[in-house]
Amino acid sequence: MTASPLPLVRDRRLVALLVTLVAAATIATALVFQYGLGYQPCALCLLQRWPYWIALPLGVLAIAFAPREGVGRGLLAVLGLVFVVSAGLGAYHAGVEWGFWAGPSDCGGAGLPQAATMNDFLAQLDTVRVVSCTEAAWRFLGLSMAGWNALISAGLAGLALASAAGARRPAGRI
Image 1 (cartoon, rainbow, N blue to C red):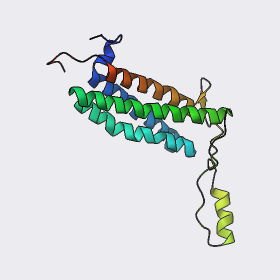
Image 2 (image 1 turned 90 degrees about the vertical axis):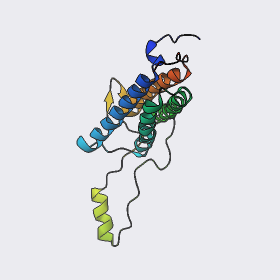
Image 3 (image 1 turned 60 degrees about the vertical axis):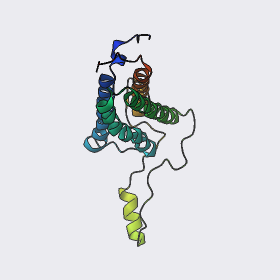
Image 4 (image 1 turned 90 degrees about the horizontal axis):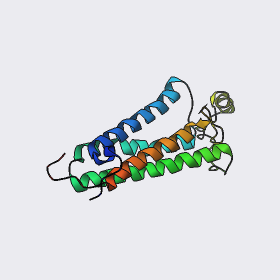
């Protein structure tokens, strides 16, 4: 058995708890930006939330089953893979914002409901705000929310996968 270079990754329950708490804080921050500060998400922003919604219940299961060798490691591995996908989505979106590649053709906002009359249609045009995937609504230290998502997700993926691949625990240890 080789010991992990980081003692933290050997404690699967602690890793699962940390990953779940950071995931919850990250999705809560996105919701605060949307509902509290009025930043409307684009289609790629909403897509990037899906791995978090998957990871939260998965993380709770990983916390509960962490002491069970096979199940705990398996759940952490799946959690790590969810965040590999999340990091990829964040990097893709950040690349779209920086103009490195084109985004999806439908990344301009949701379609409008069918208007009954021309006046209804004109009223919709006055109230609908289309959010583009190509423009970062907010940046901190040069990174957009998509860029931060890529970094956070990559870190969570690395932590979960390192813990899943870590050395087996001695018998009787939780």
